[in-house]
Image (cartoon, rainbow, N blue to C red; front, side):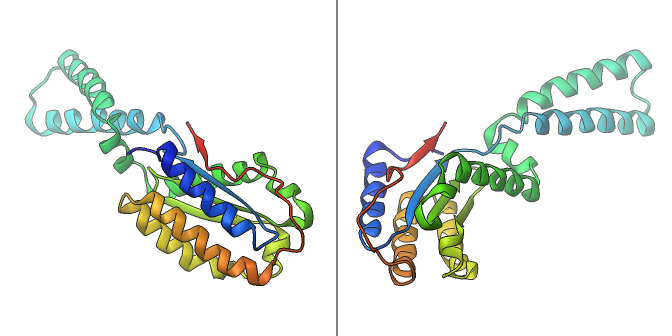
Length: 205
């Protein structure tokens, strides 16, 4: 899973600039590969399985003495901890609710950190994507939410999420920005030239 190249980020910047010419909305886009490192998840699963599996086998089959059982449990824990850290396995061990919760928290932090709540007229808008969680969210300030119902963004988010799942994050951004622009230029049309926030895609490491 790779983030967008510099050239692809430039395409996102151009799309934002095109939309902002027709609206007073201030669009900020944020992309991250993962919203949390979830370091506790591999340890949690490894601990549960290391205690449960050797213990159950020994209970029914009587293979190990106490000392050997403890050694087997420690070894199982160490091996599984390493295996479960592999990205392809790690993400499958994390419950969807936990992944979405962490991604949603990061999106809200970015809304504040990028000063989207301090724009003139409250017209800040965040398009947030976390690739590992396959999570997309659109957050808007009161100047937009008072004119456009939040339900308007749901179909746009759904379509973008599908693009992320297909590994087409760039096209998802371009489609999303264009679709948002159609609503914004009608509900929040440009009244004067301004550009309070950066148009480039913000990529979190």
